[in-house]
Length: 202
Image (tube, rainbow, N blue to C red; front, side, top):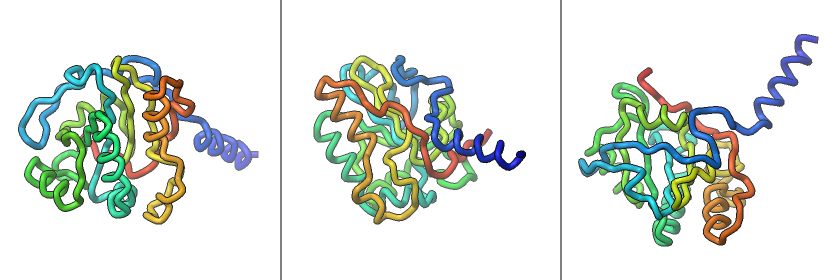
């Protein structure tokens, strides 16, 4: 009986979308202030009128590496920034924790991986991460030109670390952007993110 109950709860945890939290899909995305890798202050509100993608990252996480080694994340960045989307990569690993990098190290990492986000935001205190309740790397958010959160969750439906699984995957970020830009409602607006836990300091 006990095992049956545990199985039921496990099934619910895996199949139910992540809907609780400080930021809810369909509502205004909270503004933030952050310093990017170039020492420039960035805010969400400065990009009002544009689509914005937030990508939580950790270079040491095998789930993040899956999307960079395969070239998938770079291709997405290039495709959507080319269409006017603002792509912000966010680093919320605390100093001393896995994936932490200062501005210089992150600049080198972006160059090495041929990544092309609009910019990368340094969040060593985890302030932005906690504000959005980012749980994994990667954890993706899409915000529309009115500042409304229209998607949050996994990057795609292949919850593995295998770069080969990128091919043929349903990419939720691309779907959300394509549907919204076409004036359609986002069909899959919330999914459960997968990846390594964000390495917050507290």
